[in-house]
Image 1 (cartoon, rainbow over the protein chains, first blue to last red):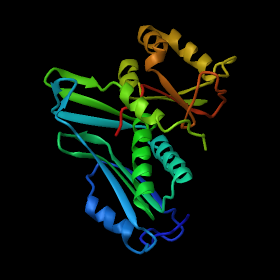
Image 2: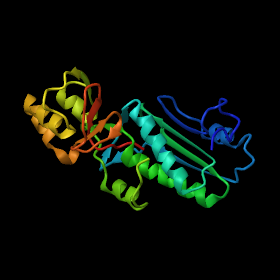
Image 3: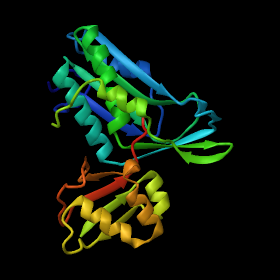
Length: 168
Length: 84
């Protein structure tokens, strides 16, 4: 499943993971995935956005910390798991780090497939696993001070509903 | 030497994000290392004992307490993740 799309560098794997401070352009990323790959019949995308209220407190800004190296490795493995379950022609995950404010985009997941069922399912699977497996940590700045966000049980349940995942 | 990394709440509570350490003799699992580090003082004892809120990775793979460790490994301790 290598180099199915022409927009990547020669020899590069079609699947991409980017961790970056700067914002991303969803339309541009969707277009890049589509161009040069006539096998694609469906593209599903998800954008995560910073909310202004969490746990009842207003959030002024948020800082995202990550574990460089392991983050990319963990997300690449999650995409690999998705490829094992569904037909994935191409996939892209962009996750932002640094300081973000409400309404900012945090994360983008795009999955291209032949048909919509596989694209939807793989996109949701990648997002559910990213939330419980990829080493990112959010710190919120609220009027009451700064606090590290606690992991949610609902996120663990969302990932668990996909059943056991084989370690690649 | 092993490389130890601490992230997020642990980094702040322990006052360090990275250190190089000679692997103490007799310490050959992640759990043994965790217990060794917990003897460094109050913050260390507290953070390393809070198993519910402590995760670890060996060479960038999530690892359990019985995971073997050896000289040259990169070992990270961190809270449950909250990205996305």
